[in-house]
Length: 482
Figure 1 (cartoon, helix red, strand yellow):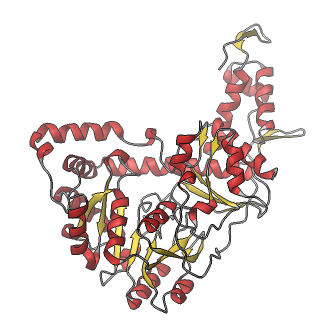
Figure 2 (spheres, one colour):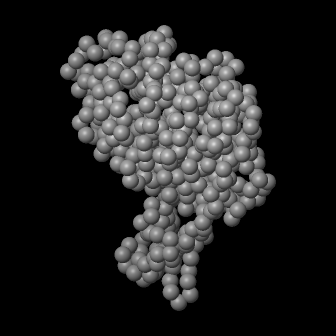
Figure 3 (cartoon, rainbow, N blue to C red):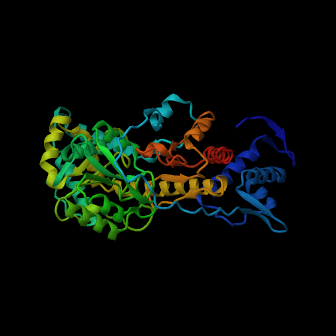
């Protein structure tokens, strides 16, 4: 804030940008939901007394909020929080019905965009703010682990993983009805290694893998590196993959594996109902098609109980369930895990020749964090933060994006899938946004068939500020001008 001093009405000495700070405080309250759409704001005189500022300062702050579209003046009544427009959710996607060779443009990856551009606001990377992690708690636990057992630093570790961590994972599976034994669990270098191992165990170059559409571009990059073909299955932003379409796609035996995120998929944010998960497991078991289930966002639910993974309905070991503590506890630890069902031995051997083991001190620290109760408290705070950030982004998109925008509001996770008018090319929109220091992930990156050119993913990974609000406003203006 510029410290330019002026004399206000009433004789007090204040900064010239005091009204802007007041406007920012009110904008934060609106973004967080403290001030709800349609709620009346304090009168100018009342807020002046509360904040001990002049009437003109409050008036300027309200004018600033009006200019941003956050509030509106009602004659003879006062100022109110502007109600957000409701957007229609996107329909079931309609991808090509034939398998595609996978070629991903590395220059469109969010990490590469962040490296190549001087970004003011980055909506592209799905990496949560460091402020949201229990860094100090985990640091203390890690120090305790190494102090009490100095020789742990010279321990290569068991290739299948530290027994303390595997027991904690098995215990936590009871929260979703899992019947998993610690010996069934294989600890990996994050979910990425787990996904690699699963695909290596059940596919060969040239095989067809069924995926959601749109699908996480990281998965597409893995399929490309393994020379696998992708068969995109129609997916609904609310309920996930179409079981009927998958049933048709697996009739001729060409599909050798299926990779899905039933709980809060990336990028759609869809949550598959339990009945659909049961049907999915039964269908793929009857067709002898292994299901690789990525449950990395399963703990990011906003309300109610934790959604069950499809693995909860598996009775034959045909589902390979993988997850990670990377997005929830400590990204730099890269500690993930997989329950591979009937392919456990194959994955154990692949893990042995791939990385041998995962660092034992990091595994033990995660295990102690899960055991001492700090994990559940942290998850509650993390879910609340993600929910607030997503709701703030949704409100901003509803205020500033064109009226024909389609938007699905997820029940968990921290990404939003936005569908613009078909005339908008988000690859071109991205270039215009990058020129102003704003980044997002364009839709074509999530499809091997280069679909979704009018769609984009917005990641809600930081506490919401006016800076984020203005970036969304500018994106909306750029989209409206195309």
